[in-house]
Image 1 (cartoon, rainbow, N blue to C red):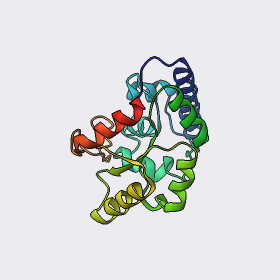
Image 2: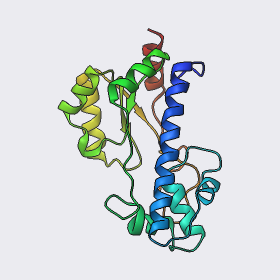
Image 3: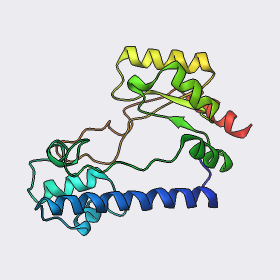
Image 4: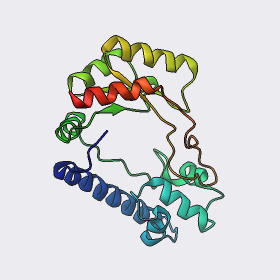
Length: 196
């Protein structure tokens, strides 16, 4: 639900991509300081021209045989608290919402799990939140019901998806493409809100 013709959005996303590159480079430098032979080009090769991130560093390590699979790279080096972990620089939610709304888009939050509290969602709604992801492969029935109840109570639209990031490498797990269907009425409501 984002029109492709927004200069402000393009500029914002370019800054985000540049920070992802900075973060991945820093991970490679940390790995090199630990004696791991890995180049940034190895990581870029794994990203195949897309936005680079930790999974690409992990896949490069696995491809070179430094770990058995990408999951082990997170366990050993790349997970939070591990020696090559680098924190993300995240923009403020309000800034993201303003950029998306200026581009005539809608803002949905995903991967809530335990953070999906009423007070949290109320705050984000006040900062421009339009929708909540209530269907995700990791959601058990209780979580799905809780997020649905919150979305409805707060007047937020609902979204869902498979979280498909491309074909997973060994040790990675994401939902399969098309594994999470959403009712057509959800899409209709999103279109209606975007048009208003």
